[in-house]
Image (cartoon, rainbow, N blue to C red; front, side):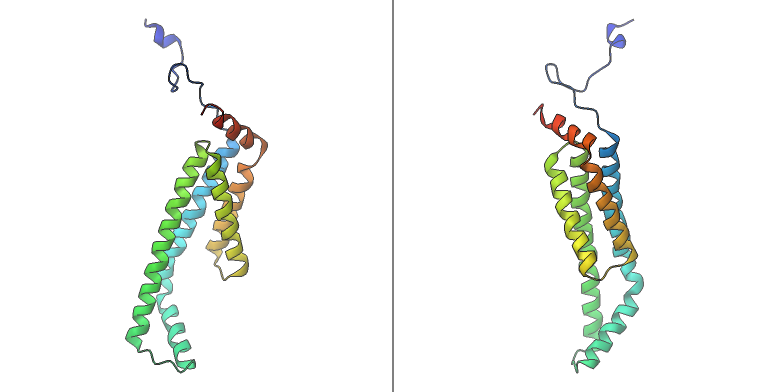
Length: 164
């Protein structure tokens, strides 16, 4: 029997301290930060289900203001707006996911960035128009921020920083 089977294997290089154990609070924050952009993406895709209502609203607003946009121009504006909204949602979701994985790896800067993004998202929901999906996404992000600043999480980030 080989001696290596008797000892646990370490992912750390020889002479390097082992990575600190990830607490459940960081794991919970990670999953909350995964839920937030997923819900946001679902909302962005669902905007296409409301295309007709959006187009009608824009046509009505154009008529009320005495606008001179044609129906084709309004259709084009709706298409561009919807595609732009989805592209922006995908970019934001990708960044959220990147920062969530960095948070999970113990990067304190990612925790700070996610906190700032969550604050901006919360302000957007409070002072703008939002959907139920927007409220769910911001709630998940707020839960992620709270979990990422608990005592076990703080200890994890401090310990993760120490070996570097």
